[in-house]
Image (cartoon, rainbow, N blue to C red):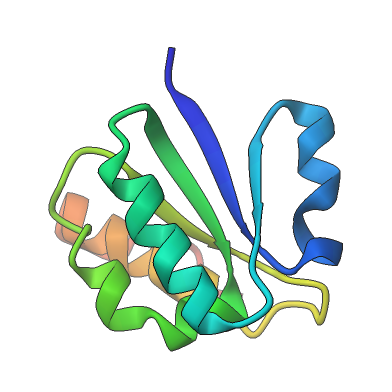
Length: 106
């Protein structure tokens, strides 16, 4: 069975332990980078959620995994709220998958 990983500051990710996610705390982007590559190399992880502030700093690292089936790396808002970066990444992935922007605009 595949695992779901979470990478972020303690306050942002600790609650996901109750859902059975594999939670990994990172104090900064460098620690998050190490965790990202470690989890991505582990074939047991199908999805890795990463808080937006780290995802922005690790954009080039995350791009390396865009064309592989697993793991899917998805940005989530952190303890400071959303920056809109995660939604833009999902929108971009949908456009690449279907060839058009199908998400409704506000």
